[in-house]
Image (tube, rainbow, N blue to C red; front, side):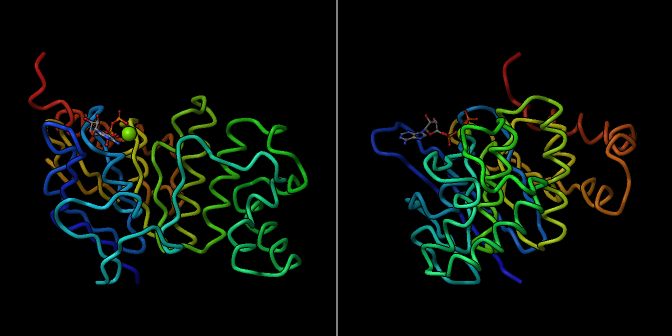
Length: 257
Ligand SMILES: Nc1ncnc2c1ncn2[C@@H]1O[C@H](COP(=O)(O)OP(=O)(O)OP(=O)(O)O)[C@@H](O)[C@H]1O
Ligand SMILES: [Mg+2]
């Protein structure tokens, strides 16, 4: 069981009048799916990048299993909105890039890449070039590449934001499948209210000015999908609709009409 903790984390960028994030505390354990939501500029990306070790907090601490982290690590894989793939490498070599850095031999790397491409439902395209793929396929390659390092945590900043509605729905269930089979801890940013509700075990609501955590809401709709209930039936449930209203109220609370 791995445990990522942000304890009273503040981030004050140089030259800014107020902190981007102030005294935010969140905890992600293996098997948790935490989703960060909130209005633009409330510090979601800042918080995610702090968890990744890309930003050092100006206050508070970030720890993994009780140990303070100060830099990115293979235990925390990051998936950006822009897939950030290497266009000069094949799909297979993109996926196994982290393994190459670790000096793992080609045959073994290829076997891992094939398994991960199957997991993201892209079997058989390992030899293709990145420019031959659609946006949704590229995002899945990015996900497979993140999983190659066998991270304890998957950190994702609006990973599905650039996709069309249908592809996005498919990717949501794919994320749930991967989360459920790998027992990883997920921390993800989204602007999608339904997406947050469907995926999260816990939703963290942030508000701007300065960015801070205003609410944490437990949700369990993703577990229902994992146990076999169709997404359509989950979303048609009145409990889902009530949760949506509650979440929207917390996001827009205090905002001038
Ligand atoms: N590198 C930076 N230097 C200075 N200020 C920054 C930097 N990055 C973000 N900010 C400021 O910090 C605040 C929070 O930004 P952040 O990108 O974390 O918000 P966000 O919630 O991810 O927004 P969005 O939903 O638009 O992506 C904003 O006021 C932003 O202008
Ligand atoms: Mg952002």
